[in-house]
Amino acid sequence: MTEWIRQLTSFTDFAFRLLIYAAARNGRLVTIEHVVGHLAISRGHLMKVARTLTNAGYLTPVRGRGGGLRLARPPREIRFGNVVRATEPDFALVECFESDNHCVITPKCRLRTILHESLDTFIAVLEQYTLSDLMLRLQDFGFQPAA
Image 1 (cartoon, rainbow, N blue to C red):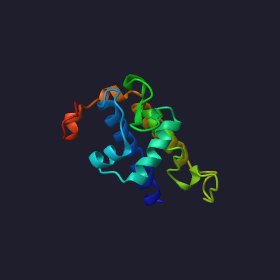
Image 2 (cartoon, one colour):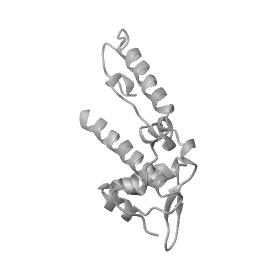
Image 3 (cartoon, rainbow, N blue to C red):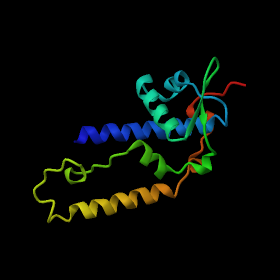
Image 4 (tube, rainbow, N blue to C red):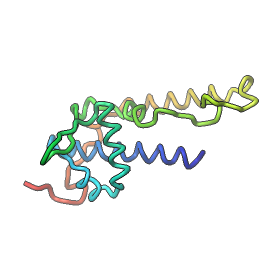
């Protein structure tokens, strides 16, 4: 279970990084190869993250030669709570959150209620922040932008 949660968390972490990087580009296109080189994320993982963010409406693909990705909406409209919902569709913190729950104490246990409350609070805090709250400049990534 721990490895499963860690992988989902990495996916969301990569999504945050890609969005922050795309915002730093100020509307210029981002290529997967460029991001792989600067953010140290494997191409395979980044492709999955980009696909998820595109399907969720956070990135827009530009096809063809010289194509890439760019933010689909202004950074002030991208709330981190929504990004987490898009990248973490199943918050099964414990077995009783799962559809195939076999925990015998579930009918009497109150842990599920407490964990749902804490998860709701976690998401509510993330909803307070947008991508514009975390804007970085390209120089913050350790390189100078091309002219």
